Length: 117
Image (tube, one colour):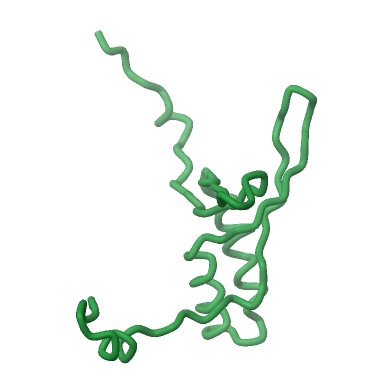
């Protein structure tokens, strides 16, 4: 619902402040580079990861971490997980995972492309 453009008082009544997630979440992963295999660690700032955290806390209370890890470590491993990376102007050398993209893995028989002609 969009707030009133001209009444700041009405907007403040309607807009809720988001709760900050009290933890930082990271992915550690290996990449092949020209110098060999290299390990990277990047912080996840994807809003869906934050929503997942709050949903796990609400549904599982003290067992939230087990369920959260299950989704990020196990469920996404069964998909072709990709990171959408970005940075901020002030910290141009610090790359963040701003979105987790997880289309389902294609079956090997689906990978074959038919001839165009």
